[in-house]
Image (cartoon, rainbow, N blue to C red; front, side, top):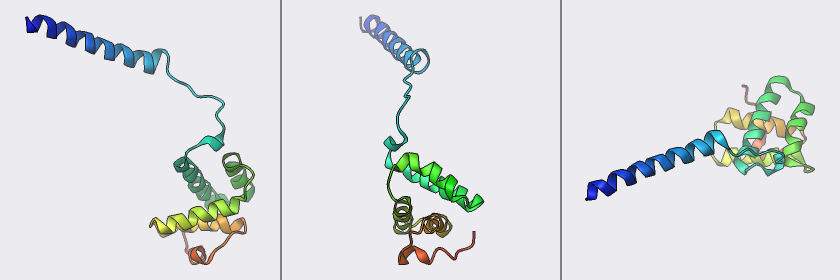
Length: 124
């Protein structure tokens, strides 16, 4: 009696889960379009600062750096945003070279602090 009910129930459950995964991932997956870059989470905004600092360390192009960060942070002082992130990397114990790259980007915007100035002289 239990076998006659359990086997069809398990088969139905497996079929339902499989069909749900197929529909959700392949047939009608969710796609987000038109979301502004400013709606990124804090983690992704920090990642944008980090990758922009990496690119700036490579090419030294402040205009390109501004072009990368302005859509994300809008009409704010980018130097202060980057400087705050550099100070956070110090507080969070990031490797000095990562902090140095972000601090150099902040300094290029004219934003400096005694906390980050010691990282400006580190060589890559």
